[in-house]
Image (tube, rainbow, N blue to C red; front, side):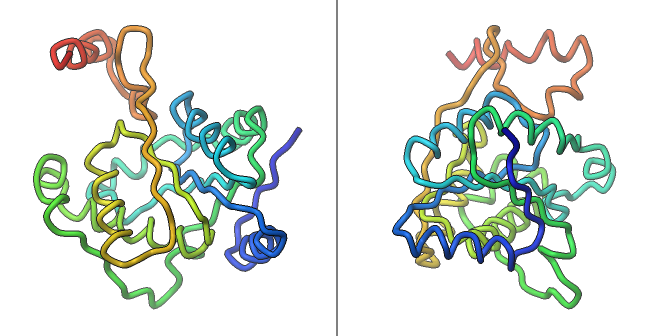
Length: 209
């Protein structure tokens, strides 16, 4: 089984309108690709809770405050599509940066308060970029429910605040963190850990427990 990949908002909306005309509910799982079991668990949760499921794959330039980090972020669309086919999602939406942020794009989205401490203090502008792309993806997909991992806890709080403040018609579903056997939270960035760093990283979960 292969999954349909769409890259244009107009094509996605045409498909979603057909689903909604048939009375079907739509779930979305926003990702930046380089998928792992954590992402697949979100897709399965969406499958269980919705008639139709969209997984978005978009490496969002606006949430990277370090250009080198953006350049190095893993991009594995073919592998991701093969993994999502095993879950049975209905469509992958993988737009280009110009499709998401066309020439002349001039809008910013900022969620104060919950975005300020922790990661927000060390990555200026990061959560503004998250809020902007999430708001756009909700509008593009017209989803009824959106599924996010609790691993990115602060991000989940930002998204929930965004939806509540702007009365966006989407239910946010937080899903439990999926971990490796040694307790390390699964993450696309784990591939960038050194051998020594990978050995040390699970200590954080053990200490928190």
